[in-house]
Image (tube, rainbow, N blue to C red; front, side, top):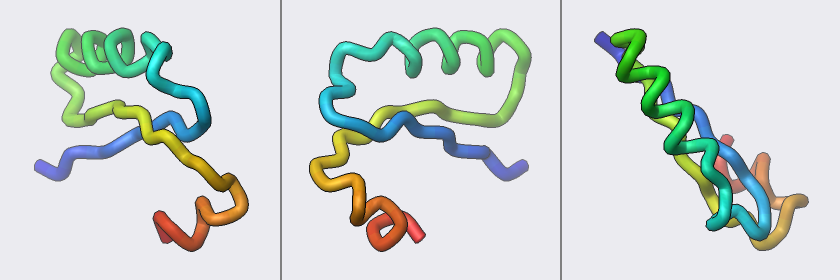
Length: 51
């Protein structure tokens, strides 16, 4: 089964509790997904970096 990946992009992001909350929900629902955070220094390069 394919795992979906979700992410929060920004600066700063290290304080975000979103990955903890979402990953606990995914696990509880047995949903094949992972949520992470990514520090993005330059927002204009988001598309170039990830697509």
